[in-house]
Image (cartoon, rainbow, N blue to C red; front, side, top):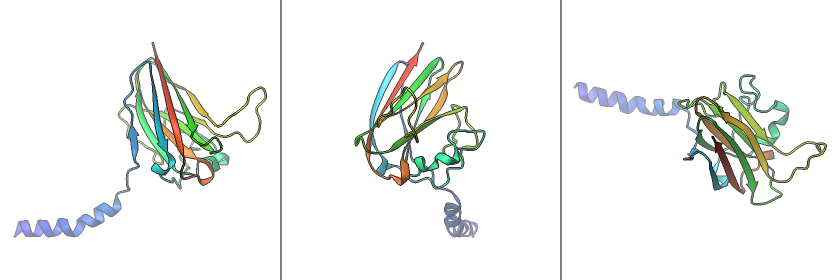
Length: 183
């Protein structure tokens, strides 16, 4: 009798447990080695919209201000990799179509952290690149987006990279280049 009751209990409540859990975002794991350059092909169609961007302007994340949110309203394709200690990383996104408006962000978290946007209460650092609103003196911008200043000194970190379409862009191919320089 106990087995039947237990089975009935689980089969009755299991759908409620499944509904209460939020679906995990698909994150592509990249294996990287020190002093390596990685080149991947991606597409925004493989990502998902992220309706809540408030994590980005939270003061303990400080990735981009709310005034720039239109540049991050398309599909987000997420990647993760380890940044070894005594290393620095540069991430470049090159859209297949030079007219496609893409943005990129990358943030560092602890190696064992499972905090993925939009559930990101804090991070060690966040860097971002998007289309400029106005020209910058002495510099020109093309269709590529580059984030740097991702560093690990005395310990390794996990880096999460988000490639995003601006203004609701939901599809379009891109090349993701990741350079890791270690001592």
